[in-house]
Amino acid sequence: MKHIYAPWRSDYILQKLPFKGCFFCKNAKSKKDKENFVLHRGKHAFVLLNLYPYNDGHLLIACYRHAASPEDLSRQEWNEVNDLTQKGISVLKKKMKPNGFNVGMNVGKVSGAGVADHLHVHVVPRWLGDTNFMPVLAETKLMNQDLSIIYEKLKSGF
Image (cartoon, rainbow, N blue to C red; front, top):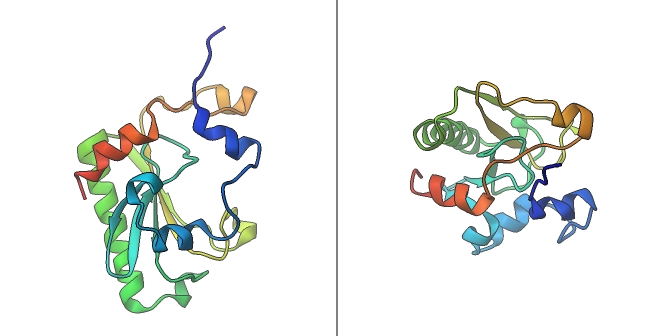
């Protein structure tokens, strides 16, 4: 039997999350970018790594302002979220060389949003053959690299 080492996921699995409230708002206010895996800060929005990623390099793009839906954003916020989505794809292509992407947002709890009241965009890099039996049979997703290594790799691209 092989063992998978992914200790950062234990808090998520056991639901021992380090804080209550909106982690986007917490990270927007915090100055601890490296600790929070914040890759880039713009005027209205920022980019960070997903702590509980679907794939290595899974980015989240969110406004600093707590807003739940695209129509709640100002034109400037919406434009910057879209610009950072494009930039994120570009950085991931250069630094991680994926074969494709899943890009999108879940608006509202029923859509699957984990944080339904703070709109964010997911940019998930995909590689040919990155799916396997583990999520289906063992409800486990394999991550190939530690988040701190991915952070260092992507940070220079922003």
